[in-house]
Image 1 (cartoon, protein in one colour):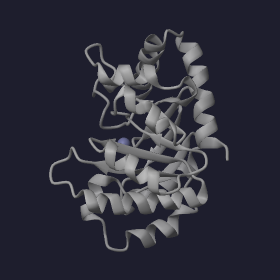
Image 2 (cartoon, protein in one colour; image 1 turned 90 degrees about the horizontal axis):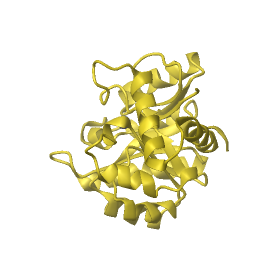
Image 3 (cartoon, rainbow, N blue to C red; image 1 turned 120 degrees about the vertical axis):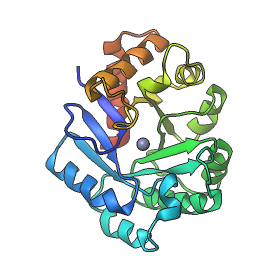
Image 4 (spheres, rainbow, N blue to C red; image 1 turned 90 degrees about the vertical axis):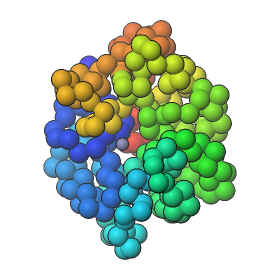
Length: 234
Ligand SMILES: [Zn+2]
């Protein structure tokens, strides 16, 4: 079964198709070169909200220099969960990068933790890529799914969010329109040391299939179609 990982970081070779996200100018070149060597890899470059405060002053110039060699924008976003966050600087960096993605109609991988209202405010005031946006490791409520869906949002989840005792992410996953559902690993940090990338990714598919009342094969076929529509075609 062919699986598609909608969001991860540099961790080594994968037998499945993966979107590898950079987080700051220091790793963008490596992500792009990794994708150039391995056809399984789609490269995304972006300034992560956790990196905003430490970013070099010329990060936007670096972004301009490299974006034409990348296939997507990410990981970008807003985070009011992390200690010492500076939401204004995060918003400025996020808006600017979202605009760059919109101008080029590139896929965009968005991290949003405890910042749904700020994100919705920004989405209301500026253009998004025509192909839509991707909310990775979606942590909003099931109710908010329909708000984000207005911006042609895709939603991805990983196995770590979907454990037996988890409630919020499983409920949100059940509320996502089936043609907007993606599965991710967010490797390497999310994966238990005892587990391989492929096993953890498959576990996400299995749990999503259970929650949607589908066979894992049927779910995988739908997720593959969603992934290709969002990441691979204009
Ligand atoms: Zn990530």
